[in-house]
Length: 109
Length: 116
Image (tube, rainbow over all chains, first blue to last red; front, side, top):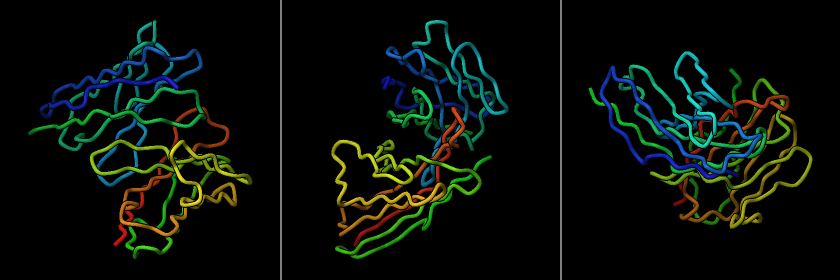
């Protein structure tokens, strides 16, 4: 299973765009990149998943360069309710998901 | 979206007793479910993979005799913490994927276990 590295924490202000980058140098050919969000005392919630290039949904965008050794989660115009821990996971579904340290995002008013 | 439900949401038990946590996939079948444990300010740690109709696969360092997993049907897996001790106090979370899906895994809301 590919190991992921992401910043421990990030701060932002409401209305700003937040980009969280994840490194996964050992990603395998069959691996997908998935991001989850977790609020305190809740289970993780799926945000977005991609294999290559760019994926966009109603809450976020995921940018994956051609070599797939990293990925960037982009949250447009964050609000206070986006304060959470964000996890980047790499794996071949439906294999088990191994969580890294995650990035603790704090959004200030 | 698909829903995974855990019960109970929180439980307090005395040392030495056993506690059972249920994980249900409400609107899809899941041959495989996963159990995680999370301590405060830490990430989720995978404990075991629960397989319907067969024995669970435990991660290294997880005591299978202490954390009993039973996956009796395609929509239900249970985790029993036996002879609980205060150090077992943690947040337990299960997850499941649709059998036919290569996409996201769905997580339960978690169970807060406090052993006193």
